[in-house]
Figure (tube, rainbow, N blue to C red):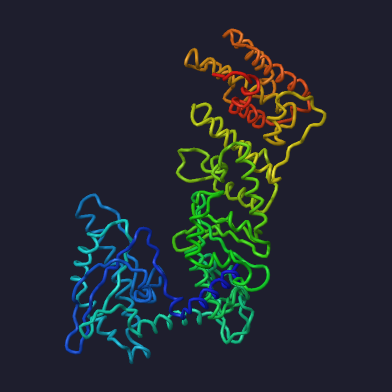
Amino acid sequence: MIEAIREIGKWQIEKSGKSDLDVLTKEPKFKEGGKIVIVFIKIDLDKKEFKDIDPEDYDSTKINKYLYRSGVSRGPNPTPIANIIKTKKGKSDAETYQNLRNQLEKTFTGKIQKWFDKYSQGTIQMNADTDLQGIREILAANKDEILEKMVTAVASLSKKEGRLLTIKIIQDKESRYIGDFDIFRKLLEDIESRKIAGISEKDKNCSVCSAKKGIVSGEVSVFKFYTIDKPGFIAGGFKKNRAWRNYPVCSTCKLELEEGRKYIEKFLSYRFYGHQYLLIPKTILGDIVKKSEIVDILMDSKKVISLKERTKKRITNDEAEILNILSEEHDFLTLNFLFLRKDQSAERIELFIEDVFPSRIKRIFEAKEAVDRMTTSDFTFSCLRDFFSKSDAKKRNYDLDKYFLDITDKIFRGVFIDFSFLLRFFMARIRKEFVTDGYYGSVVKNAIMTTIFLENLGLIAFKEEKNMTTNIFDDMFTHYGKSFKSPAKQGIFLLGALTQLLLNKQWSERNAKPFAKQLKSLKMAERDIKALLPKVQNKLEEYESFDKGKRLLATEASKRLLEAGEEGWMMPMDEINFYFACGMNLVDDVAKIIYPNRKEE
């Protein structure tokens, strides 16, 4: 995966002709636009003074002028520019004002003033094209006035927009950003180069490009889940000065990795039901750029946008998803799915699905299309997510995320899934909706669609009974796959449909379904199912509704339940009730068969 990210970064640097400074400079992550809160400082031979505070709209074309790059949480960034963290509204206007002032003072002092305190003197600064020491003195002398004007300016801005704090320098009647001065650009490169020199070694091989380099560092990490701040993570006898052995990276690969991640996050980052994943393409042999037209499309922003607009078939909730397009590629390309979760300043890997071939993606879409044809619906992973989000709707956190991601991993890797495990969660949700008279039908349909999808992929298997007697429902059962290929399951299914016809009759006449109490909240065992059939038949006769169609249905259900024998009932309670609920939900399909010449009310 690291090599694939580096290959993408290398390609992008070469294609766009980016310099080291272009790679080091980052774009702030604003969700809905942004503002740059600027402290104007005048530096002339005859006068040095603070002029004013003035916010301006963020302009992505000025990235190299802003010279933004984040740093440590405590201490200045590599350049005097920083995020202004949003503050909470207080109980009163005075408290709201104070909260904002405290946060701005923290940002101004800790990120801007401390930068000049730390970097305004040194060898590089002696021939600087602006007076860093003079700026430092102005900021210190005018701190209170700057803060007051800053509070007024920031309070008027939209709370939805992102905000950055920086300075602009007025020299010779011209206002310029920090990125317009050589000294700030040189210091950024110097600060970053000193970072990798901390834990390093000379004349060693880089673990990414495998070439022998003048210096390799052990403090380079494209992701924040790699750390050497704990002894247990350090190779070489737990000595930090030997930590370069863990993961030695040269300066060239460092920049290529940074650019690769920047590009992937911008163009190949997708949503997945409350999660985010990075799609990282990798070729099996050779240069990533020369292997496939689709990779060229992935690496070209304009083509990516047009491709996203043309994408119609999806298996996730992200409209930008392009997996269907990638599924048409040959198997010299593999895909890595990296699910990352940000935890304050760190990052956690939630799931990493490695080396998925396009042919596997194609197989998944073929299974989806089979489900769509059977059910005349649109299957996506939302059907699965319906059962694996929260064990209780009142819970604050999505406590079933681990199961959801684990099943997703097995689907993409083609690993067998325990159907009884799925049924436990299917029935928990189905029972809840049944008892509360909620979205019962749609939940059962999602369970059926998920079952057919996984069966088509060969990830769940069902024992298929031999020498079963034929009946008028055979085509319907065949249509829904092998999951119904046993007498007991078919009998339970047909009884479920017959029961639903009774409930429909009760509702039409009494506007109530009293017989639903007999279903024991869908927690029926074998004896309950066998006892239910005569109860349903008797109740239908009481309503004078046990017509020819329902008699045929009851007859076929009886035959199947008797044909099952003792061995055919070797099913857990969840499975028994699942097929019963399926019969109730698919009653319309059954009605078309038993009433071929008239519409069932």
